[in-house]
Length: 259
Image (cartoon, rainbow, N blue to C red; front, side):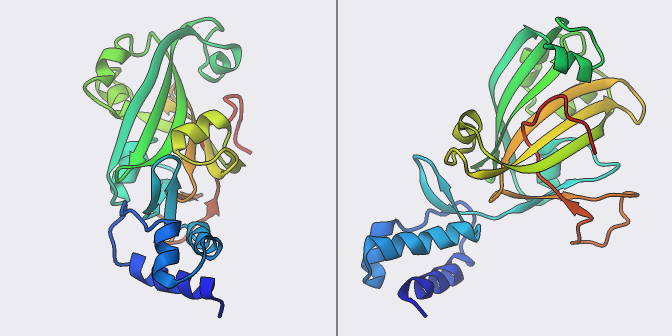
């Protein structure tokens, strides 16, 4: 067993007993504690990161991370905050921009309206247990919720706003998930390095089972923050803890459709 492997074993056992979001020792501190050089300490911390036991936040340090299940299944509301909360974690979302813009052609097509129709382009950053977890862009027509900027000052859940203000019942029309390399804008929002693997989740929500489109979403999610789980078939038929399919998703092309 190499010294680096021994360091990983010891630290993994110790970190299993500390809460998520706990700062992990630096390379210098690990090196001093175990009597090794920076290279061995760096390799050990890198292995913990590869195992998704710790999460490196650019400009912030390295912290323990608890991955949660992000479940996509028939009958479940397409709500980030509700899904994370039901997984036993604490969600928080920050609005980075809420711009009134003419809807681009591909977005207008997805929302079943005319190109140039007034709409909102919403950019948000989301956290799980206080740590960066997701960054994404959402589109909806202005006619749906004309007072969206004001509503977002009182309620961070867009799903709740659509239900309470627009009187809608958001359901998933389709979702596509894939593992991709995070581009610069997404990596800045996620606090990861450009090119790091992340879930790309693209989806369209509609009003009820057969209603009109409501919301087009493209969201990047840190792979070390969630396990994206897709259950196919009738809701609730899959055994607990199993997955019918695994995918990725966040910020994908708005024109994508399920395969």
